[in-house]
Image 1 (cartoon, helix red, strand yellow):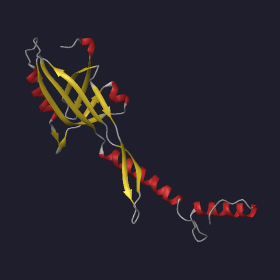
Image 2 (cartoon, helix red, strand yellow):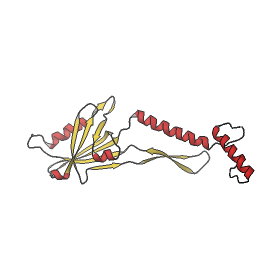
Image 3 (tube, one colour):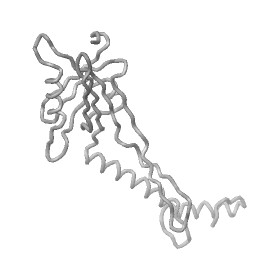
Image 4 (cartoon, helix red, strand yellow):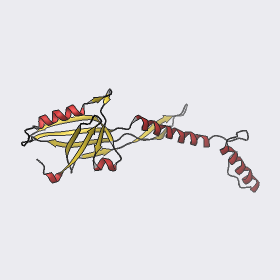
Length: 193
C-alpha cells in the first residue's frame, strides 16, 4: 500500500453529473501522448509520396492507479472496481460519455474533456491495480472549425501558387504583374513569366 505523500487525485466529472476520484501514484500515474496527423498521398502517375501536415491526433491519456479495501467504510477493492466499471461504460446519446478531467498535467497539455477508451483491472495481493485509458474529446463543432480554418489556409496557399497571366484578374496576380513589369524595366526580374 502506498503512502499519502506518493498519491495525487485525478477527478473525472461525467456530463451526467457523476464523479470519479482516482488515487493516482505520482511516480508513474499519468502518461499523455499526442501524435502528429499526416496525410500521405501520391499524385496521379507520380510514384513519389508526399506528406501533408493535418494537425494533431486527439491525445491519449493513460492513468495507472490502485484500489484497496477500505476498512473504515467496508467497501472492498472489487466493489470499487465494479462501481468504476459502471461509470466508465456509461453511454449518453448513443455514444460513450464525455468526462471533464481535472488534473494539473492534463490542463498543462490543454486537455479538458475525454472519453474512456479502455478500463483494465488486475488482481494483486493487496487489492486491484487498474489502468484507465482515455482519448481526448474534441467536440464536433470545434473539429469543423479547425477543418474549415485549415481548408481556408490551404485554399489561400493554392491561390498564391496559381499561374498568373495577363488575362488573370485576381488582385494577387495583378500585383505580381506590376512587380514584374517594374523589375523588367530595371533589368532585374526574377519572376518566371
